[in-house]
Length: 269
Ligand code: HEM
Image 1: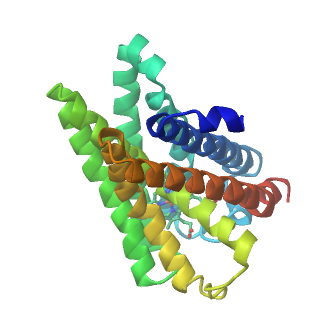
Image 2: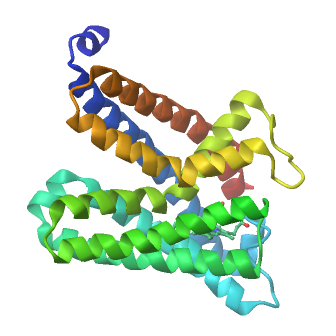
């Protein structure tokens, strides 16, 4: 394995690091979908949505049916969106089943926008942990989803495949921002504990930095990866490869943390 890595060119290593990152993200998505299906889906069927309070304190308020519907829309559609989004990325499906890619793409865009709008409603109407700046960053994530959705579809309609791909990747990253946040915060908690986190209010420099790393950094890193794919500058290619590998490791550590400290206990508890 080590020999295989040594004899690869920087460009091959970059491709490998991209695949490694995507594999880690897909593993996280599978676990997230299992948590949402068993947690929200199954609990919704067995106890009704009032049982969701066990999963999240802001999930259900008996006096607020509109908010409850928004929450249900938000979490249940997320299950379908996450599965559909990943199918869009598989090159074999894109090449062989173009019709499916088109329909699934439309469904993804509609779900991503609906989830984001419902999330914005929840944030304004019900509020959530964190401070105004963190809320603004999450809102920004939602706005990027909506903007990227419009531009992805527009580029596809004009058959501008290069532009379509660029905006589709931005959309995918923005739509996964909330998952990035969970993975990074749990990676931090596992390694550094509550350092830089005010656990009573869920604020502090760590939470703010992780918000930036979840909603803004992925878009910048995507630009770097795209540039690294075109340049012959070995330093940039190797630095990008190393960053992608580091992010993959952070994702794996975070996945371990979030599954065993949050998702698994929430399902069985
Ligand atoms: C588009 C991608 C998004 C997905 C896949 C997503 C997914 C989720 C999920 C699964 C939960 C349940 C939390 C849990 O049980 O751990 C949740 C909660 C929530 N989401 Fe989102 N979300 C997205 C975008 C947004 C946006 C853009 C906003 C607001 C601007 C938002 C605001 C909220 C709020 C306020 C809650 C309530 C829970 C809390 O207080 O933490 N979401 N989201």
